[in-house]
Every structure is written in C-alpha cells, then in structure tokens.
Amino acid sequence: MGAVRMSLVQIRGLKKHFDAVRAVDGVDLAIDQGEFLVILGPSGCGKTTLMRMIAGLEKPTAGHIAIDGADVTDLPPRKRGVSMVFQSYALYPHMNVFNNIAFPLRARRREKKLDKATIHSKVVSTARLLEIDMLLDRRPRQLSGGQRQRVAIGRAMVTQPAVLLLDEPLSNLDAKLRANARDELKDFQRSSNITAVFVTHDQIEAMGLGDRIVVMSEGKIQQIGTPQSIYDDPANEFVATFLGSPSMNILSADGFRFGFRPEHFLPKTLSDNSENSRIFQYYVKRVEYLGSDRLVYGYVRGRDSDLTLAKVPSNVRVSLNIEEDYEFAVHHSDLKYFDASTGRRIERQNLQEAV
Image 1 (tube, rainbow, N blue to C red):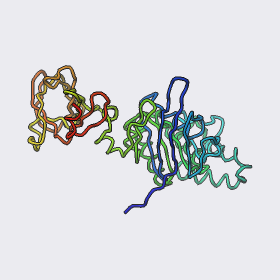
Image 2: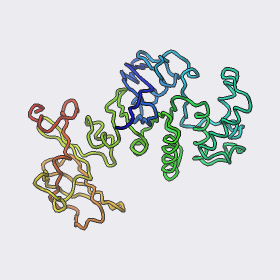
Image 3: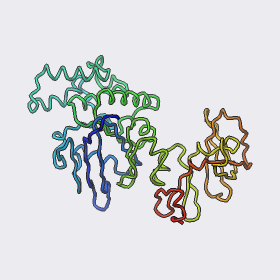
Image 4: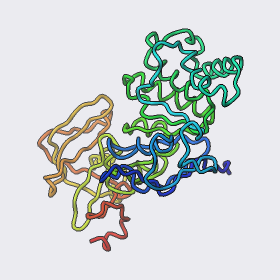
C-alpha cells in the first residue's frame, strides 16, 4: 500500500460575493501534502478568486480556510506560509535575478532573524534547484520568458512556503516554450515535494500537470478527480464538454441526452466488437486532415441539427468521402448519459427513471 497523504489545506463552505455576483459560492476542498492540484475552468468561474482567498488577498464572505491545521481565514498573507506566482511574474526590472529572489527574505529579515550569509545561501540553493544559478547577475530584460518564470518561482520558493500558488504562470509563453515549462515545473514540484495549487483555463496544462483536477463553473466545484477519471467519467455535461479537444459530442434523446468523444466514434468497419456497440448512420459533411488524425464533421441521421465530430487516425486506411453516408459505431462503454434538465450524469441502467 502507498503512503497515506495528509490534507495540508482544508477549505470549508468558502464563499466570496461581490454584491450580486457569487464569484465563489460554497466551496469545500482538501489539498494533500505534496500534491499538485490544478483548478480548471473558464474565465469568470471563480478559480482565481478562490486562489486569492487561499493566499489572503481576498477576504471570504463566508467559510473557513485552514493550513497545516491552523485556521488562517482572517490572517494576512505573510502569516499564512504561502507564496504566489502571478501571471505577469511581477519581477523588479531594476534588480538582478539574485536580488529579485532575495527580496522576500530581506523584507522579513528582522522577523525571521536572517543574516546576509543565510539569505545568500538560501538564494543560491533555490537558484540551483531551478537551474538558474548562472543567471543571478542578469536583469529581467536579459532573460527569456521561461527564465523569468523560473525566477518568479524561485522568489516564491525561497521562503520555503507550505503552499505554492500559481496563477496561470505559463500563459505568457509561446506554445513550444509552454510545453517545456510544464515539464520543468512538474519535475521541480516532484523533486521539492512542495504542495502546489495551479490555476488555469487551459485543459492541456491541467491534464499534463495535475495529480488531481478541480473543475469549476459559476463559482462552484463541478468535479474533483485525476485527469483520467475526469476525462473518462465526467460528473455532468459541463465537465464532459469542457474537457477534450474537440469536445464530447452531445445528442438529445427522449428525456435525456447522451454523449461520446470524437475518438470513440469510428467507422463500423474498424469496430472490433460491433455487437457491443451502438451503430449510427453518419452523413459526412467535411473532412480536415490534421497530420496524425482526420477530423470528420457531419450529422447523425435523425439528429441533423447537431453537428457531430469523429476523430479518425490518419494511418487507418478507410475511405471517407464528403456528402456520403457511412455506418459509424460507438462502444456502449464509451457512451455517457445525462439528465436533460439538470445535466447530471446518469447511468445507463437508470435511463428509464430519467425519462
């Protein structure tokens, strides 16, 4: 059996209202020691407000936050044992890398009784961990985007916080650098065993980084789970359609709705067991060639108002001509069912109750 993780951060009934706007509306969440937790959701869902309340930058309307067993709901940020990396990095342009990383230590020098030698040692060891110790004399303008990100993380890490909070820190990087930065960030978090909370609207970042993902919408948590469990077993229609690129196909039926992912929607001739599959008559409207895949746009006959996508590997030799009908199949285990009125997931055996 693996080691049992202890919850480092406990959030109970947390709310933040701005007049009539319920930015965060009753969140319960436990974050484990050493966990990389990702909070994912669209703009305006409350994810950044939730992080800012953990950091102490926003005062909750209601609810409680505890870190390492101590109630910190009313404590200022500097007394919470957390550090935050902002989207803009917020580095001081007139300071070199060493002084940027050292800044929070110097700000607390008297409180923490830190001498110059201790500060120097902490800065250098943090820079080495992040592999930026050769950049300590440079100014931010002399650094690449990825290097600036590591400096910002180093400045947050040097105080040895209990929790590292990251507010979309990769959004300013280009696509290639972002992929490398994700890999570096995950390796760093694992090697340091720090508890990290990462906010993003990017599902690729969430799926690639998170030990667990918290999916939010309209101030509420929709689902918490591992990347695979959330992708394979969405709790509701919002989660099903928010994760995945392209997103899950959703079709209406009598009294319920059902969905399937484009990669599970394949020509019947490719189905290894058509007896356990549902067969659809599929009209192909358009085909896009995307290198490793063909993205097929069309309509399921009888549901011609709902554009339906199929994702067919390009190395599969099957002809798909536009403006023609084909039999496509989805395995029953890949079909997901949702209540038509609430959007909540329902099991296939309970469909009669939902009708």
